[in-house]
Length: 365
Image 1 (cartoon, helix red, strand yellow):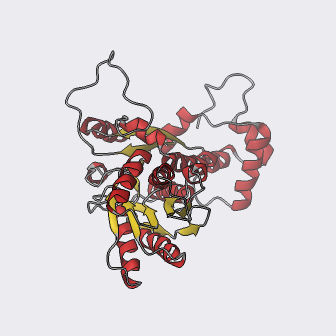
Image 2: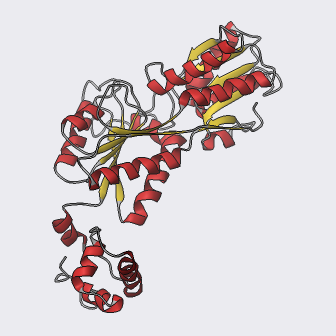
Image 3: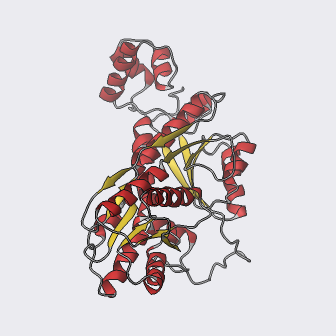
């Protein structure tokens, strides 16, 4: 790593080496993450870096390590392709997170994605790495992501996919690009991922509703082509069947509050005497609570409601939601750890890490 282009007075590798009592080459090895450096020496160099205020020259470092220290954080979907490219003077799409909202608008309206970003940033930042947020909701955008990585603009990708038919994971593996997914891919792919035990989480919700004495129970699912939704529904149905309830009413939503409201309206029209609802995420559960309140139903006295995620929406809901917690921040951090491990060992096999859910009991059930 060279210090030739540093402004006068800026701390250099030599300054760090003198403070640490080691050679310039040793300092360079520690800063570049070279293995087999004595831990005592590593710590001495780190203290010297902190005391001198030395900051590595990123441009020079990237020439040595062939790394950018940038990670693409990709939110990917495979929805309906726009017929034409948007015009520069076209009015903006709905930005309120409603059913007509743009893809990016829906992403930012869902507290789940904020938790993913928090987990990723909190893991990468102490390691001198930073995410580059990208959206891949169209075929062209997905090609842009692959090109971005192929050109070396980022070292790898962390992918949060919102659609079962998303081809991006397969595109990344076919191109030999390092990537890790949040959630098990719907299509078979040799790619690492993190996920939560969805069926176990749904079981916790079913058991809690039954323990409360609920007997006429319904569920609001997410899009039924999404593997996580299928698993939550299977876990909920299986638990109910084991307890002597072979039939539960189902309404499909789209993970938005508005779709939860629509689904709850439909369930009440068809099953006005229901007394328990499990929604596949907190936003839909919040929508269900709004409709129940508008219909004069008390939550939880008349109808108990349970969500999934334990997001900020669960606390904002009135009453606060009982919900199945998935540790999103920890899962996102693990996703980043797996990617960094893959970058260090490109020959390593793909792996999966499954987290356990827990039930957070509040006032709605």
